Amino acid sequence: MSRIPIEQPLVGALPWAAAAATVAALPLGAPFRVGLALVFLAAAAKRALRAARRRADLRRVADEWLSTAMSPSPSAFAWRVDELLGRERKAVAGAVRSYARLRADDLLAAVADALDDGGVSPRAVVCARDLITDPGSSLHCSARHNELRGDLEAILRPPRRGS
Image (cartoon, rainbow, N blue to C red):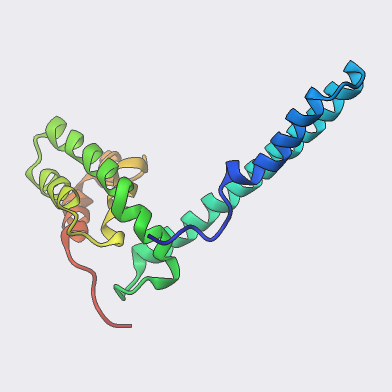
C-alpha cells in the first residue's frame, strides 16, 4: 500500500505537543510554564492544520486527475488509488446502497453492487462519491435528474484506454 506523500497531521504535531507536555511538567513558575506550554501547543496545532490542508489539497488534485484519467495507470497517485479502492470505496458503496433503497432504483443498486464487489476503477469511486456528496449532482438536483441514468451508467462503464 502506497503512502500519501506528506506527513500525517498528528505525527507532525507530536514533537510540539511533547514539548508542551514537557514544559508543563517542569518546576517553573506557573505563568511562565503555562504560557510556554500554550506556545508549543499553538505550534502543534498550526503544524497539524497545515498538514491536513496539504493532504486535502493533494486528495482534491488526485481525485480530479483520477476522475478524468484515460489511462488505468495512475502511478503518480498510487497512494490515493489505494485509499479510494479501500475504505472509501466501501463507504461510498454503503451510501449509494442507501439511496438505492430509498428510491427503489435498480441502476443505483447496480452501482452499489459494483462498488461492493471491488471491480471498479478509482474514477468510478470518485464519480460515485461526487454524485452522492455534491448537492448540484443529478442525484440531488431536480433540474438535472434526467442526467442521473447517464451518470450512473458512466460510473459502471470501464475507463477508456488510450491517451
